[in-house]
Length: 90
Length: 199
Ligand SMILES: [Zn+2]
Image (cartoon, rainbow over all chains, first blue to last red; front, side, top):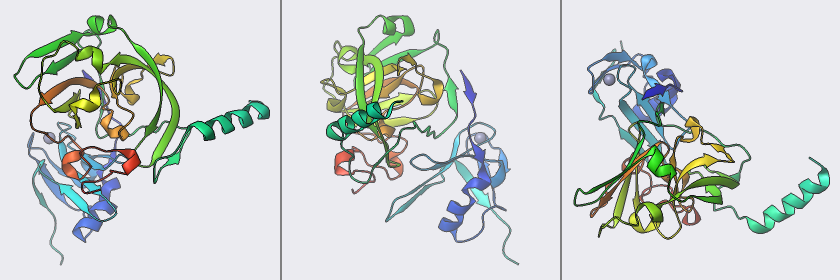
């Protein structure tokens, strides 16, 4: 089984993430719980346009983060990440 | 296309089709994916039904192709709000695949190649309501639309019609799938606009 990619770079998800975290996340990096790879948001693979937004690991294609917006709620699953880190504001 | 024929088609369409609440009609067939498109080799393809007792029923591609198929024309309703009328599919009814499966399960979790899953009540897979489809519009089902084979369950929102289907797990207790466990509705009836949990 081979896989054909059809994703955007993770910065395509920056707007959705800023809505959720209240700050620009393009300088954030995180580590994949599945394979241990560490990456910046821009290096992740973003699948948009479906029922929700999915960020996947460039190393193992595992799900790092999923985000769903309804008219009244936002759901976040970041269970595919060990952690997220970003520079503290100066 | 001649104008006369278009007009006639348009009237026929209006008479026969309705849009569920909140939907709009599209002539396109948008491709929505939660992950990379798997290219599944037909000589490695398998479809497995696993019951709540662990019993397995497995078909390889040749065995699956030997099953009786049906051609159905159905309307599709995607939770992202597009609906597409009169799509033609060929596939094997789940009634055929589940005919010799002994189960008292009430729920099904559908599994795909890749990591996609979706949950449906078992009774919604039966009685001529669902197919494992392998041809679309007279052609082999292309990978971006779920080929070699996908679930087709047109009375529910289209995320339930799992692309690249590889099997169905029958369960006594409902387990949520990829979208259902992050906010999407467990059942997903477009006519009751069951988009999100709580709708
Ligand atoms: Zn990884």
